[in-house]
Image 1 (tube, helix red, strand yellow):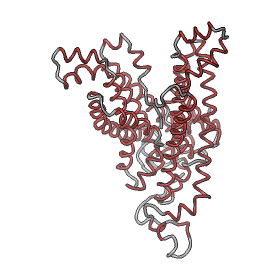
Image 2: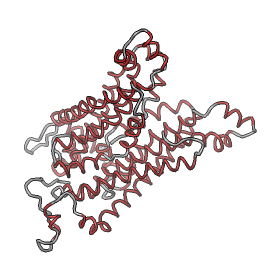
Image 3: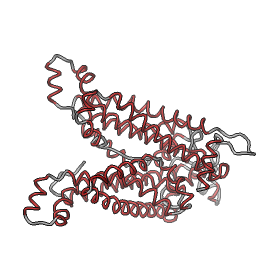
Image 4: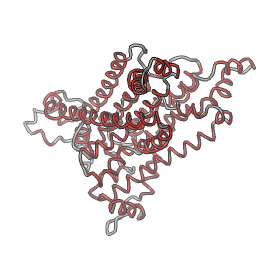
Length: 240
Length: 243
């Protein structure tokens, strides 16, 4: 248990080791990790969400959208990073590419399923009221799909945070993974401290996105069947 | 492990021989087929075999634990919530962190690696098995009871077979997840396909090894997934495969 006490002391010292030259602070590394992950998620959402929503809206490409998710689950993140390093070399470019490759499929799959599975009667009613295709997507399918769409983004976000730290193993420096990768300088207490921060960061991202999802979910959905939607909201899940 | 800085022309130190020999390795070209064939039986194949063993052990133990939990939760509903909360938290913790968090208690060992790997299978397998059992139609259960089956007979001969597609779908996710995470486990246990990847990184980013080991990990995951799809088709011929 002593190791864990020392680990929290290490976090309390903001990642410094007494008698050693100054090291990157824990706060700095945590924010860097968050930044790298944030960029990865932002790019992935920007690419994947429109594709998934559009495919779902026109009810086409289910084979691609769903099988993409299945293949993606089979991609080990360290392997993707390693192959990327061979082609692109060590650096942020490779890390972000790996993050985007790994984060896109669950967002597409979930966005597709979310829109595709909106009750056809509701869509017909909306069309009957004179809404255009674009309006149907924006006013009906998107709000009703929020729980599933967000489940995809949350899965990806978790995966991205996790993979960002694994990137340290492939030589990329500038995340909390650096500490774990350098036990000689940081000792076990530092490594444990960093591990606690990474776990905390992942849980925090999960909780924050959960709150955002709640805020975005239409009130009607929260009352009826929101629980069922959430329960079935993870057609693809994995971790890194 | 301390990583060597990469930069300039990579020098592959440990090959010996004349300059003519291993020219591809020295230049660190993208893919040196000769290296692969020379190191297949000493480096790559053992790593692949260890990886398969790590995965089989983790998935088997995880399957045993979560099936037991799911069967109890199937009869005692109150158990579902606490199990889901605990396994979700375990599932959320990034692998790199979990491996390190277990290290003080279990050391740098196979046990530590397996405990972490098993903990990632629990949420998926528990949830899928329980959902599969719950989705068995009530009429089917009633019919089984009406035919005079005891609850145990009904479970073994009716409910579990009908839940098989959901259970196998869970096994698919669990297997590929463990294969993925077992590469990271190389950090604490000197085994599996993560070992050649980490070696290649510290060896001036030796590209051939990175690509081959990475591709083997991806290939293994795809093969495991395909194998389980096949298993589902064979075991549950009344359902069209695919989840």
